Each structure stands twice: as structure tokens, then as C-alpha cells.
Image (cartoon, rainbow, N blue to C red; front, top):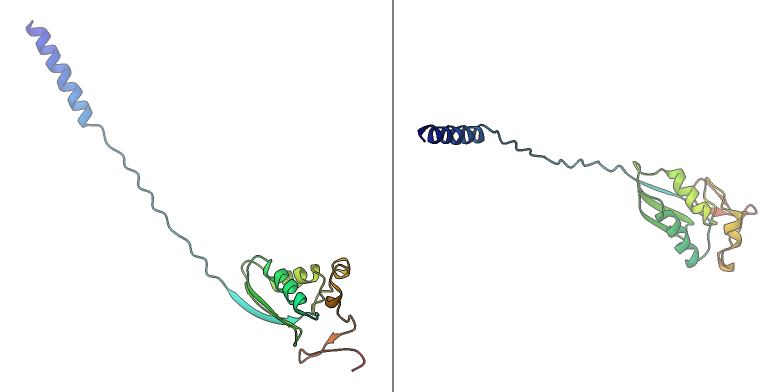
Length: 141
């Protein structure tokens, strides 16, 4: 009987000792937020148009470009002012988006198909050209 008690005590001691020797592994994960600095650019360029509906369409087209934070078209000056993040887009992408909606910009001719779909009040004079001061004029001026 002594051998049984001794064996049981030995097994219990080995079991307790082996449990204490197990190492606990704790894994800590640290998350870091990478902040990418935005490089905001402000530009202005000519866009042909006539009315409030033009304003809405031109601004919607420009604002649909990823990275554009603000676009405002001035019907009197026939110019759009655009603020955008140049890590996400560029000036030519904005010109192309506006042209796709049917409006000529200084650098890109508007889509003829989209132009034909514009309301009558939005059909601008294709003979207008942009002069150096940014004012629109027709060829006969």
C-alpha cells in the first residue's frame, strides 16, 4: 500500500510540476494608422455652358471624379473652380468627366452624343473660344 501511495504522490508531483513549467504566450498586436497626407490642388479652367442646368451638370460631373472635393461653375465667367487631391486624380481626368457630360472644356471637346441629349437651354455656341484672360468670346468679336 505504501508503494501505491508513493506512486500516487509521485504522479501528482510530476503533474503539478509540468503544469507550472508551461509558458504562457501572450501576443499583443499593435495597430498603427498610416495617415497619407493629401496634396490638395486648386485649379480653374473654362467650360462652355449657359444656364443653371448647365451649372448643375458640370458640377455633378466634376464632383463625380474620385478625389475632387469641390467644384463650382461660374456661368458669367464660363469657368469652373475645382479643388482635388492629386494623389487620387489629376486635372485631365476632371476635364474628361466634364466633357463626357456634353460640355467643352479648354482641353477636351465635349461628347457630341451627350451634347445632343442636353436640354435646349444648355446648347451653347461651339464657336466660342477661350482667350488668354479667361473670357469667352465668339470668333466674330
